[in-house]
Image (cartoon, rainbow, N blue to C red):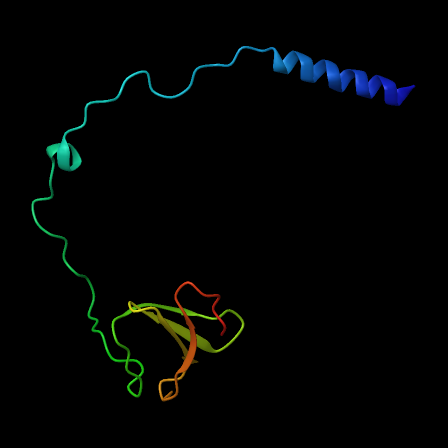
Length: 111
């Protein structure tokens, strides 16, 4: 008997909620915004803070047109992919000198 009451209450609630009128949302009109941050540009370019420089991390490895670098989760391997579609993996060690061909673009990577 209790189960029937629960089911009837649920269906009644769904019926009433389904027939409720939806409230409008969003914008009524597109706000006027000028180009380039509403015509307000910074007076000068932002300055680079700190004292840092870029260094070659893997001196024994060379890549042609590398466009990405990521790690393989749960391992000490890194993966680099090149514009031509080559994918290379190697150990995350500054003295690493061996590259393993992982895959070609469009294929499932095997690391």
